[in-house]
Length: 178
Image (cartoon, rainbow, N blue to C red; front, side, top):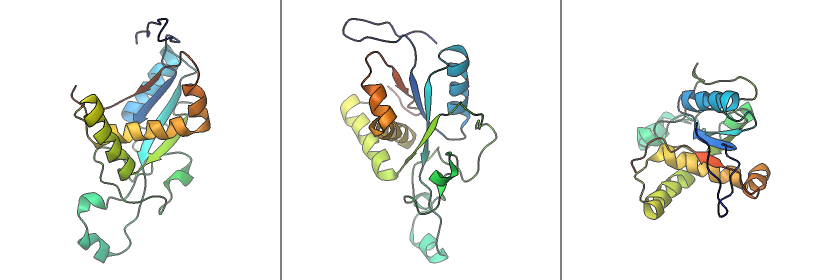
């Protein structure tokens, strides 16, 4: 990993201070967390992004809605209370969110520092914003990562980090063409 060169206009710590990534199987966010913390910056804050969870209520509901809009939500985030059914709604984002914890997802303490849950409304608004303002052709996984990053930046620790000169926040947009 190369350092970010500082300049008078853009001061930089020279390292990744925060990494935000969506959790599909969890392999990417886990691997990057391990690599950054062991070889680049042990103090890097890693934020995992995971879709909300909803359970199907009746077979009638299932028949009335498209399958992609009624996925059982993800169970990857910690603490487990973030994954309780009924907290949020259904999600249509493909490529992230599982109803089991894949083996490649690290549960090693100190690797993924915090989790943010995202929903379709915020996810697809982020996709539209990236397309409209940055001309990036991205899908829901990238929108979820950006929506999660924005949610984290509104938290107390996110605001503190964003207001500290020189801090570098990296958001992985996994499905874009630039």
